Each structure stands twice: as C-alpha cells, then as structure tokens.
Length: 377
Image (cartoon, rainbow, N blue to C red; front, side):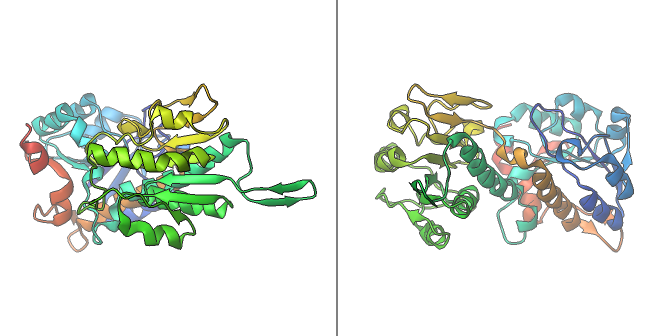
C-alpha cells in the first residue's frame, strides 16, 4: 500500500498527520510511505528524521497523489486535490462533513473512500484513534497558557514581604476533555478554579481535580451516546446564563469549551455578561470555529471590549503546541491504519461491517454511504 502524507498549506495550520516515529511503525507494517518536503517543519520534525524512518520525500505532488492508495492530511482537501487522486483510493483527514456537502459529493463522484476523523466513534476500541479527544486535551491546556499570558496577573497565591497576592480565579465552562485538562492546568498553576457543565455526571471528575463544581438547576439534562452534552432548550440556556453571570463577574479568566458536534456552538456568554467582568479579565472561546460560545468573539482575533476584557478567539489552540499536537495526532492516524491492516498478508482490509468504519466512512464505491449524509445527497 502506497501512503502519501500532505504538508498543510492552510494559514495557521502547524500540525502534520505523520511523525518520524509513526512513519517508522507504518513502514514496519509494510506500507510504502511518501511525504511532501517540509511536512513537519512547523511542528519541529525535520525532513531528515522522516527519511531516516523510511519515508521518501517527493517533490512531484500531482504524481504522488495519482499513485497513492491512501492520502493522509490534517485539514480537509481541496476539490483540486480530490481530482488528482485515483479511483478506489482512500482519504483520511478532518473533513467537517456536516458543513461540506459539495466536498463529500466530489469524493463520491471521484470514487474515493473518504474517512472523517471527526466521525470516529468514541468507544473503547476506537480510543487510540480518537483525534478529537487528543487535540481537545491539548487545546484545554493551551487555553490556560494563552489566557495567563494576557492576564497581566500571577495565577498562584504568593506570600511576599510587601503583602499577599491572592490566587487568580478561573472559571471553566464545559467539563469534557478540553475542560478537564484546562481545570487540571489551571490548578497546577495555582489558580482557584470553578467549573460548570450541563451534565451533573461530571461533577465528581471536576471535584477530583480540585475545582469547585458550580451547580445550576436546569432541569433534565444529560449527554449523548458519544459523550457530548445534549442541546439545551432556550429556557435552560437562559437559566444557565443567569446562574453563571455572578461567577463570571468574579473571575479573572473564563474558558468556554461547549461544542455540539454537527451543530453551531451554543451561545453561553452574552455581551452583557462580558460587560460585567473586571477590566483586564480574559475570556477564551474554544468553540469559536463553530460560531462561538461568547458573544463578540471572532475567529483568529483577540477582541478587547470597551470595559477592558480580552476575548481570545484562536481557532486552533492545539496548534500552539504543535510538536505534541502532531505527536498524538499522528498516533491517531497510525492506529486507524493499523486497525485495518492484515499483518499476515501485508494488506489493508476494509471491513465495511466494522463499527469504526461504519462510523467514520463517508463515501465508498462511488457513493455517499454514511446514513447521516446519504439522506442529504
């Protein structure tokens, strides 16, 4: 199997789908690995390390695309790239399938089997290939670091001859993978941490990390089979905002992580709530790419409000720790390939009845086969 890994060209994307270590593992399985020069340049993986691992660096992109049985990349491809691929080949990347009907149609028309990293089931079996979780964990960490840099305050309590510096107050909204890592990071840095989630089941996890769980009675809530928070009713959203307003006003840093997969991010912080915050406070909106949790946040920008609050709208905070983000992301890709690899015959075997493939395979055999998208085509 000929596998070609593409260097990212999207502005601000620093990650790669392959590391020298993951490449060495795939070469050992029996894959022929090729990649574009500069693949890991922005995540500090030099070309020489890839070559040493058995990867051939190729300059002719069109020829490599045409010859590849499997193309791996971080971001979704362009239609021009799809047209270069041979019929019957495979594509593995983030696809944003709910918002890319034309791209999905192009894959089907070209006869390419397109797998979406976002759609990999969140099961025990698929844990090693769960790219959303691996990247969310680093985003949660990076959110605290970015906020601390902007805050112009120390996070931990400090006893000095000139007086006591009280710990900064950090409020984390959403206790999923990103939120829990943000809680752990803020606590390690010495902050006083409060957290809220619509799922009462996560209270124990929040408390185990040393944070205070903010309780707001929203009535019946819960989580989906995939572990995501269920969407709230407008009445529940209003109750949540009212309950959080006082905590937000007292906080120095607020980090929002509320995402609804396949749907716009819920608006959990209004402009009025931001206006009630202290000058110099910082808000990090980790859902800004999905429309944002914070009124006034803008993707790719820092917004400073009239009352001196900074709203960070970085669309890919995990990319600020690109070396480790690439390390774990590449491991996710390698785990996916390994799962479908027949070590005895040294071939890639795609069992369409496999629960992981059922969840993430969008197009195959010239058609859109995933039930969530086939109905829309």
